[in-house]
Length: 194
Image (cartoon, rainbow, N blue to C red; front, side):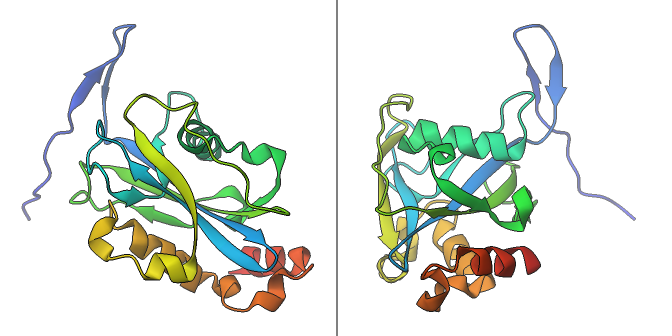
């Protein structure tokens, strides 16, 4: 049997350590529930990024000595100004990724950990680009399921529209509004049982 693998790129850190591995990225599939309506958090990629001007979910690479949920919280704060720790929220799958993509053909040999987050709020939290690197993003927005479905698929980077719909369908909690009318514990039970 012949394998078609190839060597990973090597990177050298400032302290001289050589690291040879596929990069690991995190994606925040975050939905905010307000008055029984689910809104997804999406952004528009800036001119300094690959796939400029395309829509995407908040995403980025894990830092050294950082776990996945910490990376997601940090990326959300940096790219949208949203500090989820100031709200009531639930990581689906008890903080483990709800989906892991290891396809080396997608986006530069990344391993991508997709985290699902349900945020409960009385109104949609304000978003800001104040903590972001220059040119990284053109904005962050709240969109309903219907609004997302009306966007052409080629408007999204990294097939993120597919992952938004895949998440919503996998956790069909967004299809029946009665789940969100004061029944957060029931929602959490549904999420963690799937």
